[in-house]
Image (cartoon, rainbow, N blue to C red; front, side, top):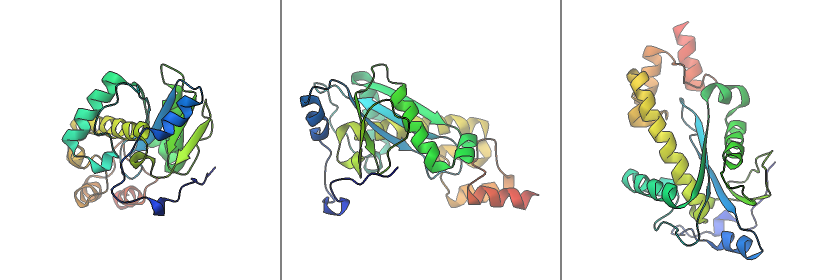
Length: 220
């Protein structure tokens, strides 16, 4: 299900910074637990897609939260630790085999649902990055296009999902050292695609993705 955001993304200035206004409107309506939700890892050829749901403490919001893609790795790591320290966080991973079975879009939405369901404190409303409402959410939700650049809770979820997935891929590199996963985290860099053609696919590669399927065909 796609839901149109009330604010056109074309109207957003490039230097927009996330704020707490979306959360505040919901909290002022009487809610007490509003989470932001985002995912990381839709594009890689290997590894899971990861989602995070984060309920920020309005009195202890880490400074510098933003879309994870706009932050350095060092800054993401530092903010990740702060978010875990001060917020209620749930992280979910959906495996490559499930991605192949469901397709990446559905797997990403499923990961978001799992993340919201996993919160220690149940969310009363979820703010979702993107334009698609995940089916099966346990609470009402609002989708926000470019939400990771507009909403602090979604920015926190963006950072949490990205760092969690990156750390998982670094660990996976120890099991599959020939692919350089610690460097590209499974994304389709030239080095990764070359390794696929030379070595074939590993157990954590997404066989439904064209470069992986091509490597498997070449190995037959």
